[in-house]
Length: 343
Ligand code: KG4
Ligand code: ZN
Image (cartoon, rainbow, N blue to C red; front, side):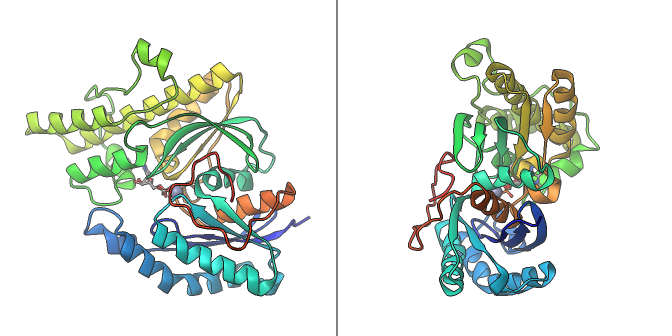
């Protein structure tokens, strides 16, 4: 049983990505990244990203069709990231998708990038059971969610008050001179460091915070603490700072995710988004979930960072659940809220 053949298009940030799935089976996952063009600016430059998408999207589409061994005519539905993201970047994907859907006479599903990050897990854990708690941690977003139906019902339990988790990694990597993007660089150097060398603060974990903001995050105090430590410690060991910073982020993410599971009586947790590729987060999540008897699901690292497979996966789940398609003339939404699964 193959299920619907769905093409997924992702262009919300600096990855031009095309995925093709047949139901819950991944057939192709092509990613062209413009990250090298942004590195010298220390962050993604929207105009450069949009131009790079325009150049990369046709070759990426051709490659994905070739990898999957299908033609455009075989595609049953087109799915595309409609938001959130950089508007000029989103528009390259959404106009390509609308053109394909119109030309092929197939339905289009204009889906949420954040829900797509979570739905990619359904490709690997194909009998994923709902409800589940989701910890969604990316470069632009960090939140705790209750998923009753990934195609229909997402409830926000809490979110970051300031920086996203990935953004905190990128900023600390920058002051440690580790380059961009910072997450993978910190992950790498932290392996040589001592995670308990420096006791950095865990944001929003006082007893008062647990009462008023149990599922919210804050990383700005941590960022300041790291900066102050570096100023006051001229002989600091970079690997120890990276490992201790990473430990502080990962510890607080998991404390709050496990609290959400416990309080809601849901013994399943999925962790998704670029930061879910972090090796320490993955290892500590396994330990703590095993101890708390929580079933843990994390997509493989390559499917955690932005990709087209996640968009195709959510599109296929929408088709399989009989959800209505989107109107062809939908508007991309740079600030699409996490609860809005599709347009
Ligand atoms: O989901 P994603 O690819 O793009 C957004 O939707 O934002 O997430 C990118 C973020 C970046 O901030 C990057 O530094 C972070 O994910 N990231 C990591 C790792 N790999 C990527 N953070 C920590 N450890 C990693 N191994
Ligand atoms: Zn993302």
